Amino acid sequence: MPLWTGRFKKSLDKKTNDFNSSISFDCRMAKQDIKGSVAHATMLGKQNIIDKSESDKIVASLGEIAADLESGALSIDMTAEDIHTFVEGELTKRIGDSGKRLHTARSRNDQVALDLRLYLLDECDKLTEAITNFVKVIVAKARENYDAVMPGYTHLQRAQPITFGHHLMAYAAMLMRDLDRIADCKKRMAVSPLGSGALAGTTYPLDREYVAELLGLHGVSTNSLDGVSDRDYALELMSALSIIMVHLSRFAEEIIMWCSWEFKFIELDDAFSTGSSIMPQKKNPDIAELVRGKSGRVFGDLLTLLTAMKGIPLAYNKDMQEDKEAVFDAVDTVLICVETFAPMLETATVLRDNMRNAAAKGFINATDCADYLVYKGLPFRDAYKATGQLVALCIDMGLTLESLPLEEYKKVCDLFEEDVFEAIDLDVCVKKRTVKGGPSPECVLNEIEALEKLLF
Ligand code: ARG
Image (cartoon, rainbow, N blue to C red; front, side, top):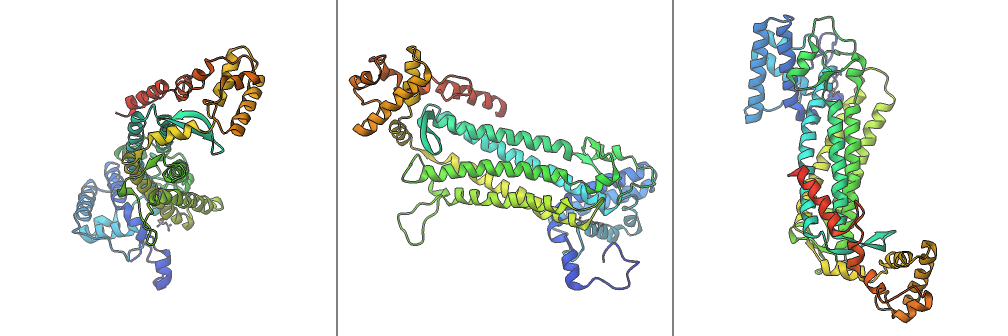
């Protein structure tokens, strides 16, 4: 039975009933719905809006319902219109008329707004834990490889020398911002809309702050229309989740490239790779590809809710029921991606020699060669041009800057001396990049230690 019988002479058309119902997806908010109702009923009793004895009965029975759902003694009736209808119906089944008093001074509009906030706050904690764990894995991998020289790229062309540890720590930095964004979302999420009623508050003497306090929320919404129709907290979280997926997708793309025979910078563990049904030699990075692919789902989820919200007049409209599947899917997707990515990275073998060989072949010390001339007094632009000529010469002669004879250097610029070979040595080039945030092993270790202090 829906909660809104009385005015209606007919029950809802069967297919329309399914179309209207949200229990198939909002059933996952059962715990939060009960928690919100316990706080509301406690406040109704304290304010003498209902008898204290009835409030106590409601609270006790809601506790039993929660326990029975948890143990499996009670299962959710999937024919109910939504989770709010189910919980109230079950309560009334158990304690009779007292159960019918629970919804005093409340509407499903402020109830659902609260439930979603409470549910997403719990999910934010799971996301924070999973991402923190992922950052720990990255930091540990970076520590093992803080001095593993590899080529850094721009335009996917070998550019300047870095270390694998430095490269990994870039992702740690991104994920730390992601954690910060989630923490920031929580600030605006942890506000109670209860008391907004259907849209216009109520005439009962509610203690809204007390309800918020019981729920561990730090405040109450300031306007009843906004209280029921605000979904910014879900949009903000999905924006943060979309940015996380951008990060994961870029990382996944690099893993995929690094696994290719063309790069061979890493090898994934068999437990995180898949084979081909026809090509016996194949070992594919499907997991990373799925993460890259799933980013589109999360962006789509964000767009679903942005679009649902953009044209609806104040206050509650049923369009807003579309918020849940989108935000649940975004949260679930990010969680599974993070939780799979972390062990995939943790168990990957880093092929340092291959990275080092790749670094030696792409003139990635050309900037250092130009800087050598700058230290000898040449203006940078002239040093740049001279080095460019040397690179062209190397390409013609099939040599590298390291193997080009000093006479050839001198033909291009007489400032070159024997010590140029020391200046363009790859290890030296990396070691000298000691500017804060730079790739020198010393800087990378500082970066790692700073994060370790924060995380462990
Ligand atoms: N299932 C609804 C939702 O998720 C609950 C609120 C229903 N309110 C209403 N006035 N129909 O949004």
